[in-house]
Image 1: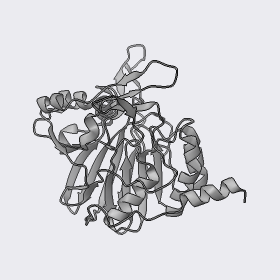
Image 2 (image 1 turned 180 degrees about the horizontal axis):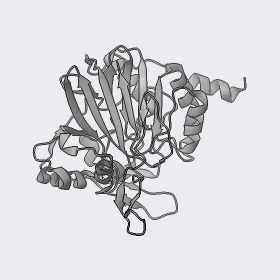
Image 3 (image 1 turned 30 degrees about the vertical axis):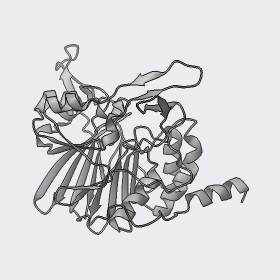
Image 4 (image 1 turned 135 degrees about the horizontal axis):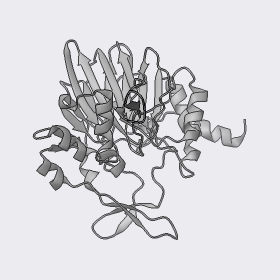
Length: 348
């Protein structure tokens, strides 16, 4: 084994966080969770499913088209650089529906929901993974489609942070900043918490800030900056990054990420440590392993996830094609390609 390989192995070895969990939680197990990807970077109408994975129906997105004999054609679902998922949690006969992120465009997520026959009126709460615009842009469409008066929204208080991209040698580009004032004017009931939160009678965990315990997940590169009231500074941590966690009875934790800016291994270990559950059942969502700044992190990330032996890995959105290939190779029975319109059914 060469020195580089040894360093990758060492980097992927779990290391305990210092002290007890900030806020230990008792996460009630559920009988079933169904996570439907309402928006992702890709849509592939030819993907097949299995007992765990159901794909969008072939006739999703049926629209008028007079050039065809029956006056209709199938356009499928939209894909965009954003992420959104509908989470349905069942305990006994009680079903609760949450919306996790909303994609980048005002109408993309709601358009896909309509094409899938998903009724957004059933949504009982919104969880935002972080403040980047590609995860919150669809809030306007949600408000316009169903009305949101009194609808609770769980966020980290850092979600309102002004951010920009300032690559060396190029003019900075401001990133759209979410407005609390505008959201509350629409009727959202904004709930801010830095620490872990339990929703749905204690069966859904929102992680809050994630402990950073690996030595290979360094966060965003120097071009990612935040305004700190006195000037622009490098913002590697994206502290408002949080994940949604459910425990499926007898199976383990299901972890849903937006971009995974905290580092997906950090997130998984944090969720396991907070809950005391010793098994990662499924990992779904963006892993942010795309591009030259993150590709060196792929190998130790894959090693660490392989050691956790999840039953399902659906890497989406910002995971990147190199990471997708690496995960598919290392976890051939667990990894499945994500796509707009895919539902993941995980049951006790």
